[in-house]
Image (cartoon, rainbow, N blue to C red; front, side, top):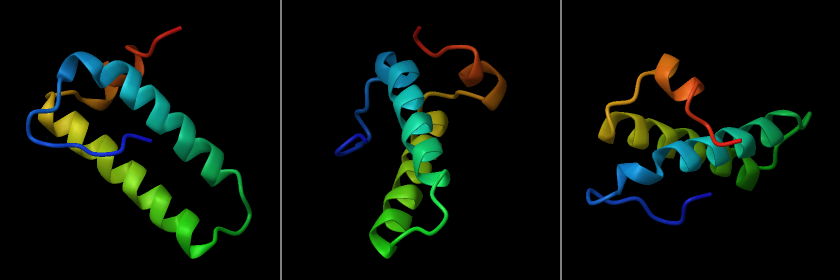
Length: 69
């Protein structure tokens, strides 16, 4: 997970960051029951994804096709 996002976020990192956030979210969603800490982490990852998509003007269709191999 990205430690801190700020208004000067470099959108050149968006593809890799979104890929990592999606992977982390998927791992958390596999669990049957999330602790409160895990739920907070899940929420934070989702918020970070939204921030990056908004900041870098990425729509869901474009983001899906731009993850690293």
